[in-house]
Image 1 (cartoon, one colour):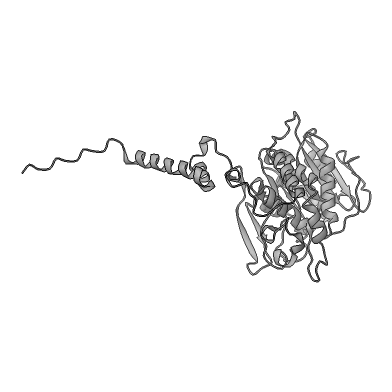
Image 2 (cartoon, rainbow, N blue to C red):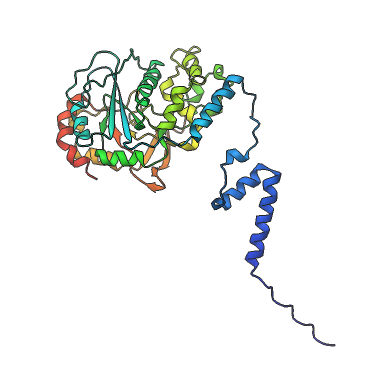
Length: 378
């Protein structure tokens, strides 16, 4: 009986057959369910894929009112419209202060030599400031009284954005307080903000009594759900498209103005400056924000207000340490107490987290002026 003939070898590598089979399955899945399309996009992103939101069914998870449909449509179109290209793009530095800015001389040193690349706006809510720097003279805007913890804080932020937005060259917007200082030289800050396509808006979930559990109100339904309620620092930087949707938002902010304020529902104290923007962007454009602030603040003392840096605390070593931090920390009010974020990323690279810092005592001005050239050196 003749021996059986050996089986001929396969004509092509096994991996080619497997790859073709996988592509066929994913293509079939793309027509069957949205997830198939997303998986195809995930593995073959070079083939001109759309975002996952465009693969998902258009039917919302709940029924939107006419007003909400209109609001979401406007926001979607703004976010999909390419930003205006100008010959002289600038950063708008917006100062929210009770009166005179104690670190105006330091900011003058920061701005010096970079004329035409920035603009300044000052919202002084208690008294008319006395300006020492040429960059601040005649930069005061119409302002109204601001009370800590109330919606007047967000109203002031939106007022600043509205005024700064009128200049088409303003492509990025930075909110600063009277106790803020720069941590790097202007060129570094300009490149950091202008060469990234995200806004640096702090956003995280705090399930404790100073977060969702103690501040969210069901009166915000249906527009703002408990699961979407977020917290974050009010000190932001945002690109022009994001500034536009904040200025034009007449649908979601009223929910916070009515139902996120001190003395709500008995013992609930909600502060809209900590919740409105984080929640709004988590719902509207979560992929467009960095989920962190670029303004450093030390909450390690676990008090209502952050640690204040007195004149004797300010040394070149302390300032260098702050500028080198590359992980952002979030203190939560639940049993976890501390949530450590991943490394601060900038365009896919690990970079220092902070461009600015607060809360510095006015008496620290001379020391900061003395150390400025050292701690802002890259």
